[in-house]
Image (cartoon, rainbow, N blue to C red; front, side):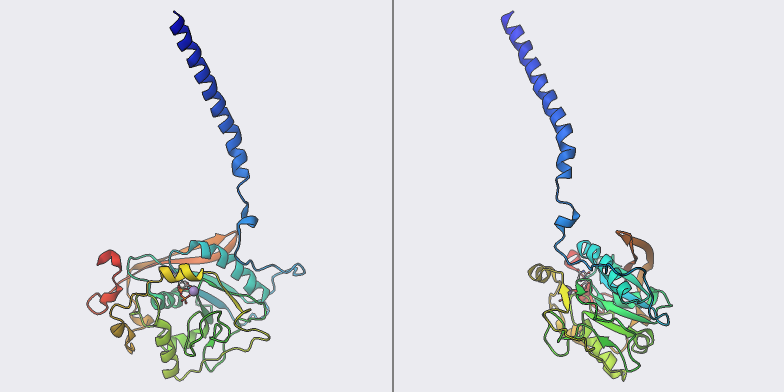
Length: 304
Ligand code: UDP
Ligand code: MN
């Protein structure tokens, strides 16, 4: 008799504790969510500040239109910084512009050249010039103007004198402004540079062989330390770089045949009009084809 009443009171106490626990959880959990650091506290990336005195968005030069073409795969955290930042930056300069994320969806190694070719093929034809633009380089100053490039040829915005860490004189990656007709003239990039690097060196040779000149802009008071913010943490970026030099000799060869005209897709790119915090961008989802006899180094580890 005694033991059964003991058992009952134990059960009661257990139930009471359980109820207390559940109700505390229900009350505290939403409170706890509110205490998570909010967006402002969380951001350690730069944000391009909208000028307080800017009343409207003015297009200062209506005769040109810029398409910003970003080669992209799996860098969502950088995309959510890049899109708002570049929208504000280009609005501030009064440049009519569209941003394109060209997203490589297949399982081959990353192909920056082929992605930029895709951007050229599928971006809005009213753009008469493009910014071939890494996602992790943010122009840090309003006076870094993304102007329509000269007749002579493309403009290397992230030339070694401005790039935060690349010093070699022939570096031609990062950010390049180029007229559509100049990109067309050199047949864009080679499509055979699967894996990190080298495609920009080959592109530079195409530009030079095509009789074009590369201009390095003169940005007042700009230098390596203050012009761009590279938002990939150096160490982390290095460790995820797919720079395996397997068959590098073959990769290094100059490509006089391929270009945007010979780019092959597995299926046609899909176009999505998206926004980040109501700042617009276009995402092109692409799947490339790779001729594994000609360029076996396109295979990622997943296939080997
Ligand atoms: N990129 C990407 N996903 C990758 C590798 C590269 O989106 O897995 C794009 C991205 O736009 C990046 C650019 O390719 O900025 C160049 O790569 P990365 O920045 O790693 O090279 P870096 O020039 O800094 O050595
Ligand atoms: Mn980078």
